[in-house]
View 1 (tube, rainbow, N blue to C red):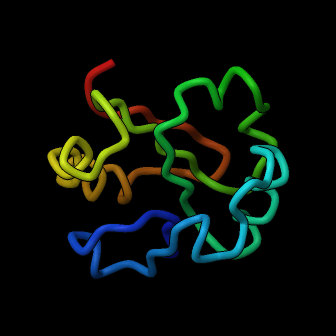
View 2 (tube, rainbow, N blue to C red; view 1 turned 180 degrees about the horizontal axis):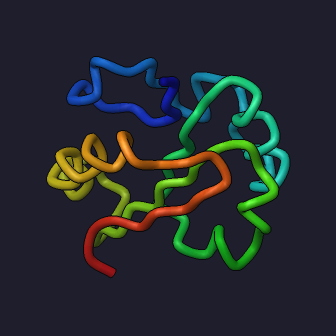
Length: 100
């Protein structure tokens, strides 16, 4: 399974960030189109993504993280839930984890 996120806690998965892929600055719709070609899961902190995009049209699962900020210190506590969610995600599906 390929996952688009970065964290040493996810070492059992191929993990890349948007900047590592050279995709920084690309709009969400095009970003999802690029990601679906190489990844199974797109992990984001953008809570508005599901309102801005028709996510079921993309051949990639989306995991939305809800944390106080996008700082690693705030996201790290979500790693166990991220790992657990990866086993049940389906392409075209969206799951939110964490506190809103």
